[in-house]
Amino acid sequence: YLLTKSPVLRLKPSLLVLAVGVPLLPGCVQKASEKTVVYLLDVNGHPNVQQVGLRGRDKPLSWDYDLQLTPIKKDSLFRVVVTTNTGYKATEVKFTLNGDFELKDKDNRRIELGPRDITVYRARFDIAGQ
Image (cartoon, rainbow, N blue to C red; front, side, top):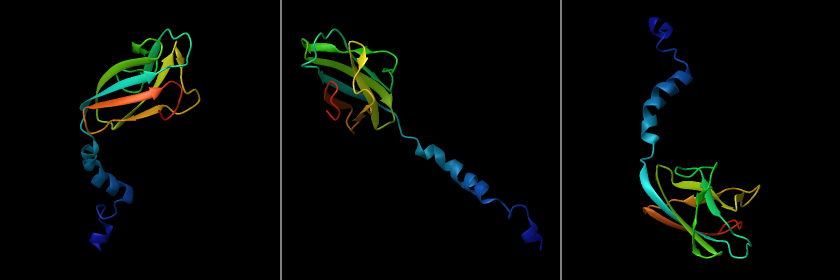
């Protein structure tokens, strides 16, 4: 009789899940490492190219301001190298041309960060999937 009335044996299932699950949470955190992405952007066919930028989710990128790309071929090919310390396996970005976002009303570009430390990402302005 005393065993069935014991408060320990009448734990709610939700409390039992918390008691067992919470100690396991720290094991779910991914280890952060330094990842570098070399972005190469082709803007060929877009007139009056004055500034080409990159915006994104992970520092040093921001959705609020451009990280300027450097021209490799005048008015056609631009480059920037971004290094970040992250535990994520992907990041999201969009390019800008003269301050205007590409891919308006479309998903951000998703860049998979591979097992190596350096990823090269080639794209054409305002063309998804490239």
